Image: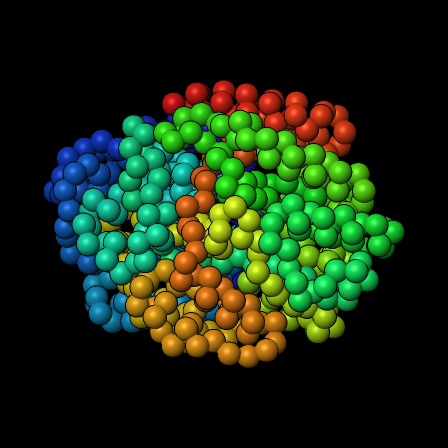
Length: 458
């Protein structure tokens, strides 16, 4: 699994058209007959009220993202176990490469009524697919679906349908947690104590500034593109991004938002970030592994990436607590999700497999794989001694232990922005970082553009 696997996926214009053109769900309860989901003709049992019923049989497709190379044996085993328990069912595994066209291709599949029966999605993709009516409402189709999951993770799996009503169209699968990953040597050169991570976002920015002054352009603190930090930094700082009903942006009302943008512009000008990374979709993986960036990805699985690809830098790597800031606790971020297509021709089989894949036994087994740093979303899994008694002093073990401790109290209520709204905010921040706008104007204009898009979306 690549280092960027669990980070926020960059989204594209295709999602905007999907969101705008969503047809929603229509139809009645379980039973034969035609209804529509996102404009596709489906069985009535897939949509509307009523528990999903039917035999677990037929062939379904299961789509993951870039997992087959590293975890082929595990998932083939899960599939074999499911097929053994259900002799009439077959699962065809598709492993998407997970490149920058993923969302566009997923949207195209949905609009062509060929979306995979069971698919791994992130929050932005789930948002768009839910609003357009392409995902099964698992909370309605199986009233017991929530039982295995930690309540906060189940809550995070809610997205708004075409009518604005929140529905559970995903099952929480795994989460990555958040931490600081950094090169101890580069921090020491800048006079920063690696053993004392900052406790606030602005404190972290101050360390970035020290690195910029000490490096003289030979290395950098972090990457420039604010898409990696919006809305995560705002959430951690306790900045309210959207109104309670989600229909308007309110982040400009908090003076700290302008301070944040001013800091980003100051750091970019000072050389804390590579100039060519302002609009790049690249995460810190490559440059960090080359010893050219002091802070790596905040994703714990990034530590594994460095261990595999740059042993010399791994020896200099340490992990620390991501600033709690105003939130007062760690943010687990939005987990990865498993969804069932409302367009599935074998929806009972697809839902059964999705729940089998995400059950406590299978989540625990995968998260124990020594080649990955991920964490489960079921209550039973998190109670396993493997997570509660994590040991070891190397960065990989420390990352696992740190996040395992965090998840006991972590916040999972990450602000969920549509790709269009996120990109509108990011674009204005980029203009401020380039010196083309003041921080105050950028924030004001970002909120105005976000409001326009939110109004269009209804």
